[in-house]
Every structure is written in structure tokens, then in C-alpha cells.
Image (cartoon, rainbow, N blue to C red; front, side, top):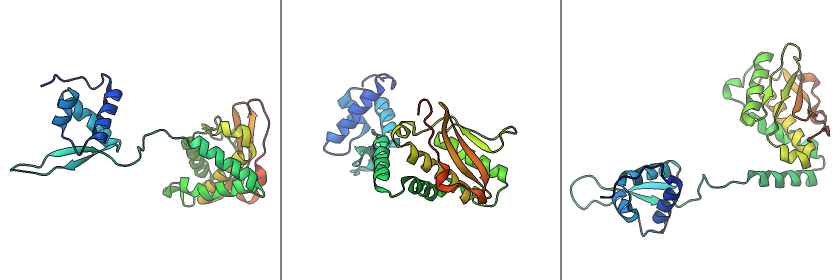
Length: 237
């Protein structure tokens, strides 16, 4: 029997070789047959198969039994797209941004509306009830953190704004700043509306500094709506 090979030694390459072997084979394979063909220890094959099964790239099947005892556990490549493969959501976002800017009669208002309509899906069920203003703002800050905005919550000295230290769509802002910022404004407004709605984001000032955007809070009755997103052409924007 071949000696055991440490799984960490050439692991990604060997794992891909194993997957290719399963893809080109005539049917499901056992660990023993795979180990023999690849000239490695069965434990090495078992390790890589466990990783591939968890990733959804390989699946277990029960083989036919020809005698007493348990039927053999076999493995075959999953016949579906690899969910862990390369993605290009930036391209999709760019296409949609271009379409919105070129096709909507009022791209900024449309972007705010889109953000508001999508925002409820970001709000946890426990937050969909009447909350004190401070808890609403905390919940919004948590949502913004999850989205990658690196928010700084209000303080005693600046109690009416949330500072955003990162834009997760910074590259799109270079070409579609008005609509992307309006979309973010709508997300914040919609998230707060999904709670008790006593406070809103009145406006969003992008790039007041090269590394800072500011979301201004206000009572919901004075919301600025689609006109609250103002593009500032600061350095780096």
C-alpha cells in the first residue's frame, strides 16, 4: 500500500487532479480505487474528498451490494456549476448602473426607490418593531457595517450623523456617483422605514473628505427623499 501523503503537500493541485479523475471516469469510484490510481494513501484521498463534498463539487452515492455487509460508499463529481468558482459581480453591477443611468427618466429618484424597496430584506426580524431612536440608529449602523461601509456611529458631539469610512462600490462611484450614492441613501432610508420609522437619513454627502462620506439623520417627517443625495467632487472621487 502507498505510504500516507500529508494532505497539505500540494493539496489544491492534487484535489483538482482528483476532481478531474472523477469527472472523466465511467462512474462513481471508491476511495480505494482512487488511491490506487493516484498512487497515494487512502487517507489522503479521503481528506480531499471531504473538502470537495463540503464544497458541493463531489457527492456521495451508495453502490450496489453483491453480498453481505453494508453497500459501498462511492464518490462522483457533481453535475452542476461550481458554486465556488470565479465570479464577476462588478461587471453585473456596472451593466445595471449603466442601464439605470441611461434608461430611467430620473435616475436618482429611481435609485432611491430601488434602495428603499430592497432595504427591508436587510433588516433582521427582531428589528421590525417599534424601537427607540438610539436602537434604530444602532441597527442601521450594524447593517452598514455588514455591507462594508465601515460606519462610525453618532457621538455626543455629532449626534445627527453617521460617518462612512469606506464605500464598497467605490469603483462604480467614479462613473455613476449620483445613482450609486442615491441607491445607498435609499437603502438607509428603507432600512429605517422597516423599523419604527421615527428617524431617517435626510441626505448623504459623499466624499466630504477623501475617505469620508456622511449620512445625516433627521426626524422622518423632514426626510429629504431623492434630493438628499448630493455628489461632491472631492479628491479621490
